[in-house]
Length: 148
Picture 1 (cartoon, one colour):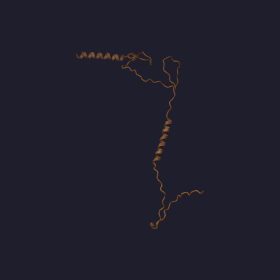
Picture 2 (cartoon, rainbow, N blue to C red):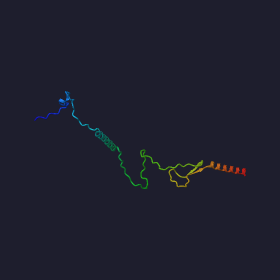
Picture 3 (cartoon, rainbow, N blue to C red):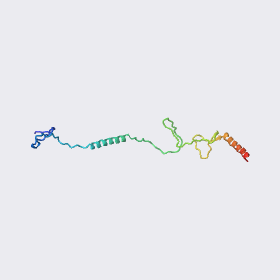
Picture 4 (spheres, rainbow, N blue to C red):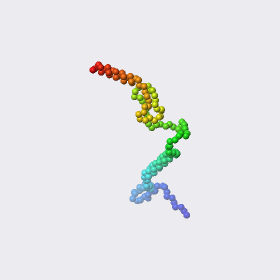
């Protein structure tokens, strides 16, 4: 058995016909259908997007497993102290300031102790403010005597 001859890749020359007036026909190549570049472009874009989504899915943070219990009041069993344990910060803080200038006589509550509305937290000796009030009352009284 003999193998069929392979098609040659050389240019095909058309036979010369008597109507060509002796001109040799130009070499003709077999026509090949040109493909559109869009399917390839779309395929590359889809592969890039799929790789990006896969990498984003792999990079997400996994939740940390923790054990929780219900909070109950009770006596302190263990005292924990560690520099890596963190710091507890209050959600609401209050700055207590005096409206009048004076010297602190007594502090009636300890730091961090609960205080009810209307409780006296600090007793002040405001002798300067008291003396100013007395002085102004005297000046007002003297002024009233001059203008009446």
